[in-house]
Length: 176
Image 1 (cartoon, rainbow, N blue to C red):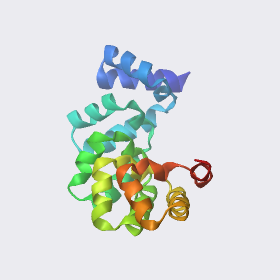
Image 2 (cartoon, helix red, strand yellow):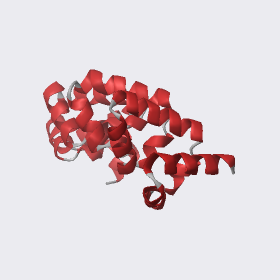
Image 3 (cartoon, rainbow, N blue to C red):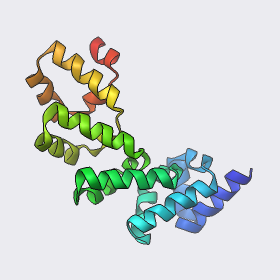
Image 4 (cartoon, rainbow, N blue to C red):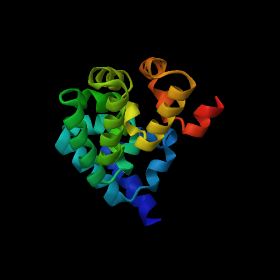
């Protein structure tokens, strides 16, 4: 009860009653986060962006409030490192990125670069930033399956066209 009420009260204070109701309808599990986690996440988002942008990100995807502030900060640090000035746009387009730990983002980026090269990786990330939330081992396994089924060149073209193929566990990719 305290978590639910504290989380609800915090969400209402943050975005207003009507917006909070709408956000809970879209993402009911947002209220499962402890109030302290929600506050920490929001504080981190405010420091990274601005108060208005933090609220915008929450309204776009209330689940960002479920990420501990350490996760938000580590994700942002790595996103800046690997994307430079494109990091801001990537998070605005896909707020879930800020919920992935920095090591996951870095691992996914490094694996993608090793598969398709730096330039194509940047292009893929711009088109589909969510690819950075994939565990690196899943990405490696999926790529190996595609490479074995087709060729490295065709696998790279497939990834470029549809980066979500890297999110499929290797067993699923083999069954396809």
